[in-house]
Length: 151
Image 1 (cartoon, rainbow, N blue to C red):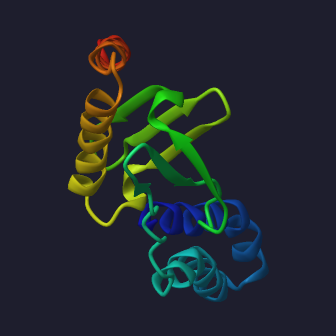
Image 2 (tube, one colour):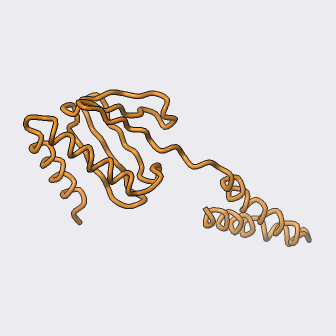
Image 3 (cartoon, helix red, strand yellow):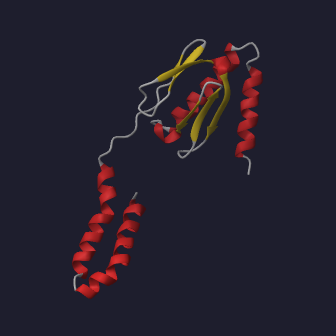
């Protein structure tokens, strides 16, 4: 966010600097450019962190939030999940795929990176334990994850 603010101020000064200098007001231009450049930073400082997605794990199904506001949810059985993928790191995401819909939750939406990793591991464990052929889909998920992370 700091980079955006600085680049905005620099662009403003560069583009309008020549015209303002010829008009005799470079100090005013500098003040307006600094204010305009720092405005996105000031506006984002008091924003609340986005809520952590609430995924409810039940015995044979899970409830996933459909929207970013977490107001609407969808229930899926563990059998309906045909893709489960976690791209690690703070800039990664947790992706849960089903025939009905795909759900992608950025890791930064979780309170901690470990929360996303723990949810991923718990989902894999429940799919493996609750389905008669549970190890087969989990192995497929792992192969898909390895192939997508390979360089």
